[in-house]
Image (tube, rainbow, N blue to C red; front, side, top):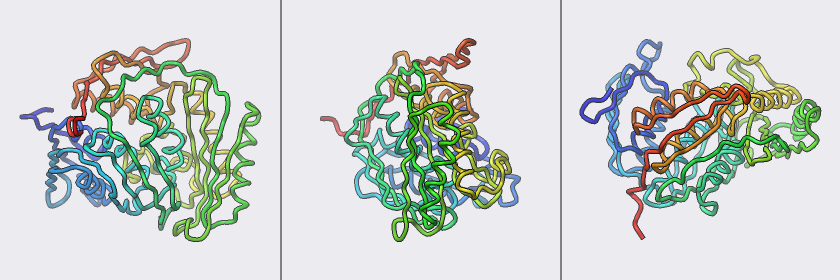
Length: 392
């Protein structure tokens, strides 16, 4: 609903996406009924933290929140970026939850971004820093973002519940995104991965590799999982372990899945098929699900590899976790035809399509293809240009 240039939304879903698109398009938004009927209504601490992060990155944004935190008005500012920024992501959501929108936003900044983020680097709710480093950033490079300025350095890992991880993100600035044209899925030619552990026996990484390879070697010989066992200062404040797997296809597409040890009853394997991690961990999509406790290293490996096979089965040029990002980049691109091929759409991808239409007036044409069981999507980009950037 649009009223005098103010876009109105309801509910807590797609919180980051709304703020991201509001800032990129320069349109003010108002979000009402944020967890209105919840036992603790209003914004969560990680959402307030994300608002603070937006304030650090932009100049002149205005945030108004009512007393109960159930209603929010956001007037976007100019995206600045710049070096030497720092943000503590807290312990409710992992660093990955903050990184996803941050990368897209920073491309349209006035100066190249360099920011240090502290918190949880690997958990079962959000994409881990490993997926962002090995899949998300290569995807952006493949779509035409400069190679030399885009990187994610991991200084320390941090597991739930105490975190203690630290990463540094660098993002270059662009005048405009190039058109997106990704339609060739290719065949899987090799699988790479990282088995990591923090403050536990280094042997658990090897056991996770065994668990992962046990399933994958039936299908493919070229499987190599690196091990990263950290202890001492570089291992954060809590024990934990997990594995991230990436399948690479003949056409250069990357599909990821991961699993990590967990002791509670939240969801464990986040092959991106459960890719709605837009939501708070309290929402129905994450309550229950999974097998509850997952603490045997071999099981973590086999759960991750099963999730990866599921992702490969879905088809498309990206996994479920990256559908929303790909659709967003296509919609932000120049005013010419963008083409993508995706597997069945995740709830987050569907919400992305709706918000892209609301903010940018970009509508996708989706054609399901029977023989390949994928969706062929086309759109004409919004032609978003970086106005904050200093002209040469």
